[in-house]
Image (cartoon, rainbow, N blue to C red; front, side, top):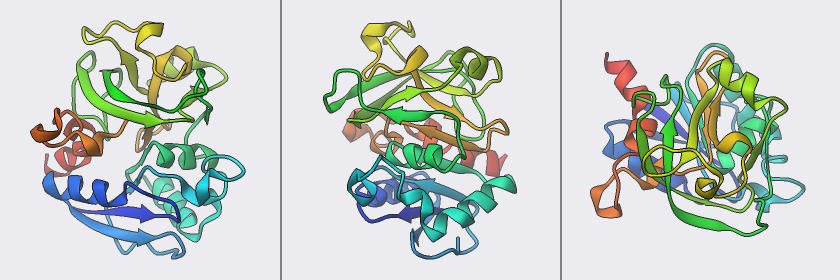
Length: 225
């Protein structure tokens, strides 16, 4: 399966994402932000980083890149799209996902291993609901806000929440103050997803966890089913 990885000025995890996808069995294809051509890929990943130096607002400039028009059209046709960290911010700014990402509640950059409770398995999560994944986070503007987090959950659009190792969701396990401990969401159709944690850094046992494969590789599982 050919999966595109978008490169923006300031992206810093595109090579990590491409390597992780290759390890999971995909064929990564690098997509330049200035080209409105997805090269016939079957899924798209927007990686983490600091697009345009996070000037103005995280993801606010990247949303106008030519590639984002092609990504929006691809998503509207049901194509699988995943945004990781800064990629999540870009998708929210582009209106492809609900809500927004703001400064962490402690106004400090957070980098730590994080437990996530799966809420809604689907295109971008192959682990069952209620299971706990261990995936690193690293962000300074990762506080997810949305007008009605309860309605989002009722619609089945909450992908994962920050939690304790036993799956308990509480403020102590929330690294950035996200509303309702939401770490990742999807669009109404479920084909577009975004999350702040970095599954591409959790696909090799040497790095401490392979749980990221349940997210980043979920689209491969569905394609082979």
